[in-house]
Length: 389
Ligand SMILES: Cc1cc2nc3c(=O)[nH]c(=O)nc-3n(C[C@H](O)[C@H](O)[C@H](O)COP(=O)(O)OP(=O)(O)OC[C@H]3O[C@@H](n4cnc5c(N)ncnc54)[C@H](O)[C@@H]3O)c2cc1C
Image (cartoon, rainbow, N blue to C red; front, side, top):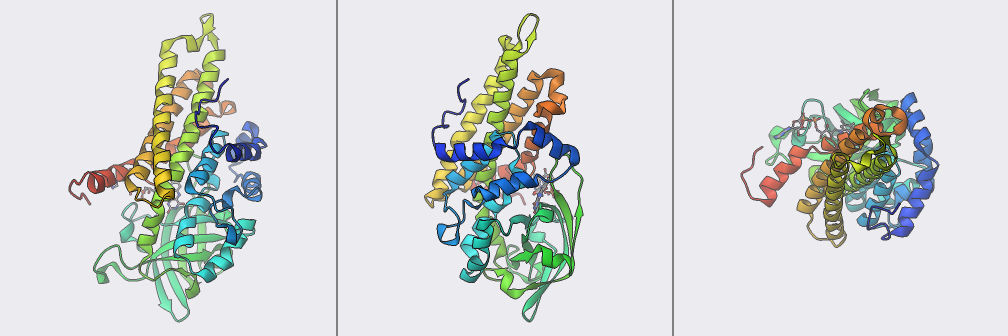
């Protein structure tokens, strides 16, 4: 059958390379990982070895210096293959913070080792149990004592920390009550996870709906060297915001990959499954939801490329990045529903992978940013309506 992605010929080398790397990790691999509730270590290792996860690291530091558009194609193809980028995507979307705001010394120390696969930067600690989406109320506090900061507090939903060497941590360095703007007084640190586990960092796994390694994380007088502060003290919130557009675009691409996977899976099954002596796909009740979802995946893909090309050209892209994420997350969820419905009862059977991908793609409505927060960004910052919170 023809490729349903009309852009499949663009970035063909990247697409082919990622598909080749993912080929060994087929349906049975993902089912086994899921059954064991384990981390897809061999898969992440293979992608690292092939250099795909270091795509955004500049060549001078050992990476391939890819554009964001190219990086987004990598994540799209991972999800299109039936795999889940959630096991390893953070290294792409946290990279900008280190690249744009890290010191030359930090970049020289970490980037070549991340590029070679010696170190993983897969953990990003922002969300807290009592503050949720209201990030400026972050309570985790890093207090400076000479040449180190002492960190106390708690984070939740911190993914991949058990399989990462480094964690980007957002913490308050000035109390909220002492800053003029609530976005000030937050700082970003690069935390050595293995080292910290011995001296004040505790990680407690959270069982969840998808096989996603995510955790509660506790800081009890954890000492982080002051040289691990990224950029200027107190400016961390703006660094995190800086990275948001890239994150939205990359996540949109993952959703697009999921969307095409669901559509492919649905149309194949619709053509093969015979009920009432004809393929179920001959019924428009089956065809139309798949065609409708396909239309929305294609439309979302246009916005994803629009956002990515603006980003790569250095132009503002907040509106497009947010819309791409929203449209793509909705389209992949619509495609997931159409695919599951097309499979009837078999959609619920693990061996078809549909129910796994269905759960995985549902997450994009909530994390890393929920749909409501995107709509509020558009309402306030793009459409000029009153600030709501
Ligand atoms: C599997 C998983 C992995 C994750 N990985 C990470 C990670 O690695 N690092 C990390 O820092 N975080 C991570 N998160 C956290 C994720 O980013 C948050 O769950 C998400 O941002 C929402 O925050 P919350 O869960 O606290 O929801 P809340 O802030 O409590 O919000 C609950 C609901 O209310 C809505 N809401 C809240 N305020 C408003 C408002 N003013 N107007 C309209 N609607 C509103 C939200 O949109 C949401 O739907 C992960 C979450 C999950 C589930």
